[in-house]
Structures are given as structure tokens and as C-alpha cells.
Amino acid sequence: IGFDYTKPSTIWLVPRTPIAKKPISLAVDPCFVFHFLNAFESADGDEVTFDAARMPDFPSVLLQGGHHWLSPPDCRLWRWNATGLTSSIPSSTNHQILPNTVEFPAVNPEYWGTRHRWGYVCGFDTGEQRTPKILKIDVDNLSYQEWAPGPRGYVGEPLFVPRPTRAAEDDGWILTLVYDGEEDKTDLCILDAAHISAGPLAKLRLRDHIPPGLHGSFTPHFFGPESSLPLPLSPSVSVQAAADVPAGPSPMASLRQRILSGIVSMLSSKS
Image 1 (tube, rainbow, N blue to C red):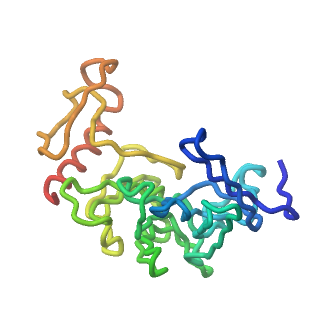
Image 2: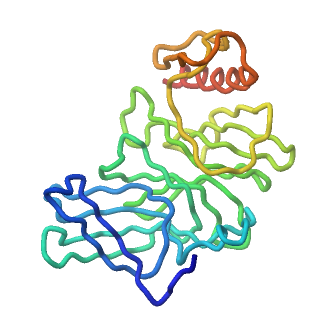
């Protein structure tokens, strides 16, 4: 696999009703994107805006067998505006949102496909001190706030969990796994999504370390035996036992207990 710098990259806009509309292609400056933050369209369907983590080329990390955690690929958060989509000559413009190196962008999942203001990413400083951290980005004002776990703390993908009684787009929590290089341990850190720079509301030390990884997901349902739940649940958190999970404790019951106990306790006190 090679990257041809002499040719443009292509944005494809594929309609969800392909019988009525045809896909639209737009040529842009050469680049490569793994992950999108979000996208939304205008009411008349003439414009689509999307934010994505943009790399200047296909990353060599995939071809050379790895990349040092403190020397991540050149990846920045950019915004594209595709306009004139209902005309015969569509076009696009773009601009960089932040100079920081970022990856694993996330928004409040209830804003997927609609206009958003806030985004959350794993980020690095622009200078020589390449400390990994969580950034909360204001894409409208091109500013951010941050939280860093420390010189040997390595953050993972931020997951946004909306508050059940939410009142704003950033009303919720950010969950991220943080590897502690000093102790060779991993913490599940829970941050207030509105005030990232205040630091974790709670830290849950896992029994086993989890090296830096890629993606995760959150569900309010617990797919496991109810006998492994050590706390009564608050009304805002439900439990669902998977039909194919045998009754009784499992090898991961202790780990599930500690994670769920901490989340339930924290959410119950903060809701």
C-alpha cells in the first residue's frame, strides 16, 4: 500500500436514499482520515459539515509495525464544509480547528448527525513535552480545556456518557482508561464532561493493567449474572443479564464488581 501525493483525496457523500439521489464526490488536498468527530447537514440539504482527525498521508505506523506512544503520527482536528450539494457544481472548504496532535474524537452520542459545539479527544502538547491528555474542544470558538494524568499516565479513548437528567450538550461524564506507567496499573477515570480540567470525579483501579488500546463503548446495562452486583442499583442505572451467561461468579466477576460499583456509586451521587 502506498500514498500518492500527486493525486487529491476524495470526499464521498453517500445519500441514505440512494435510489432518489446519487453519491457526490469532492476532491480535496491529499490527506487520510481514520476517525470522524461528527457531521451534520443544513435544513435544505445544500451543505454538509464534518470534523475529522486529519493526517497528511496514510500513516506509516500501520506499515512499520508500531509507533512510540510519545511520538504519535501527525494528526490534527480539521473541519470541512461541503456546499452547493443541490447544484451541479458542489465545492468544499476546510480549516484546522486546533494545532494539537489529536486522535479518537468523540461527541455526546445524542448529537450524532446534528450540529455540535463540544468534542473530546486524546491529545498531545504542541511543544517538546509530549504529555498525553484528554481535551475538551469548543469547535465554534476554536479553544479547549484539558486534563493530563501525569508524566507517565497514558490516556485512552474518551467515551461520553450523557447524564440521565441532562440539561446541556456537555452535561455528562467522560470515561477513559489511563495506564499508570509508574506502577504498571490501569485506572478507569471518570471526568465531568463540562469541566474536564477539574480532573477525575472518580478513579477505579483495575486488578490487571490494560496497555494503551483503541476503541471502547458504554452501555447502562450490565450483561452478566446479577449475583456479581455488590450494590443496589439507583433508578437511573438498570441491569440486564445476558441469557447465555451462566449463573454464579465468573473469572471476571471481581473486575466487573469494582468497575460497576464505582460507576453506580458515582452516578447515584451526582445525578
